Length: 357
Image 1 (tube, rainbow, N blue to C red):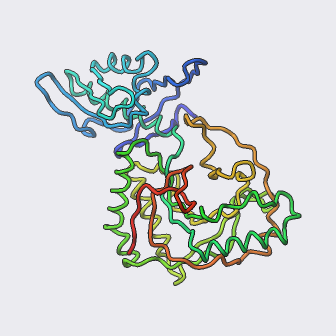
Image 2: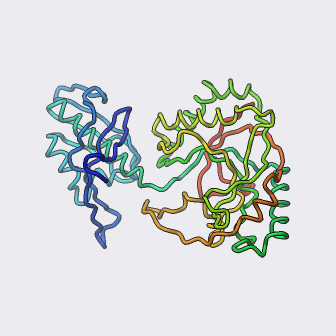
Image 3: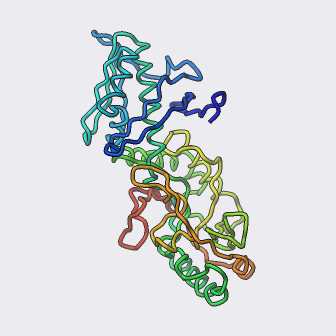
């Protein structure tokens, strides 16, 4: 990272510059990883960004955060909290691990309370970004016609292309888990799951009803494409999904949902538009049938790992099945799906949903 072009972190509509730091790993204390950012310099003045209450003793501000992130504010042996308190002349009260509540910042000076709040928010944002994804917004594509079409596709591919390098039955998706992902989420508490449900409901009321007309979206799953640049070395092959009436309503709907969730901070902004695709073959499934694409490349504590994967030669598949039709279906619900879970139908467990009709 260049000193003159540091990474910017956006919090509550304001940009903060993230200074480079040296991370240390302690062999016996990995669960108490300490990561203090030092002085967080603002790209613009944050004095009006937070609600600060004046009390008889001075000033007070509160921060709600999942208990999983408390340890990063406390730091090893309490060093991070002490450093913030000393530099901002404030007192910081943090709930005990496992207890839900508010982080409370108090101090004699308003600017000190705001400075402490800013540093805490940047720390929370930094460590939230290190957490593995827990949930995702998606349409389920597990109607009978599409599942049968997928199984027909798998059977024909294996019959005609099994001699091609890397092509075997282990790399095909589970037909019960076929889905369209809108965006990935990190939800670390029941409160955050509820916030996501409420945000999805607001989307329905404010624009989804108008786009869908209060009816399911009739779509067709047809045609295949690959993710990378070399058709002879493919890791992910996906089916395309489009509106049967030729309109752009599905793309408009998912892009507006993505935009709304990015603006709220529930989804980290990576893309401006959703790439509508349904994964049908993935080389990560070869060693782990429960793998979940590129989002599976993290340990439980958020550390990035590298998974070796054996690519397959997709040239014949792309030539023979370029316009393969998996079937038609009606999209009537957006689900908040939990990763690595299965419901009674074999699909991802849903923590909440909205229906179009």
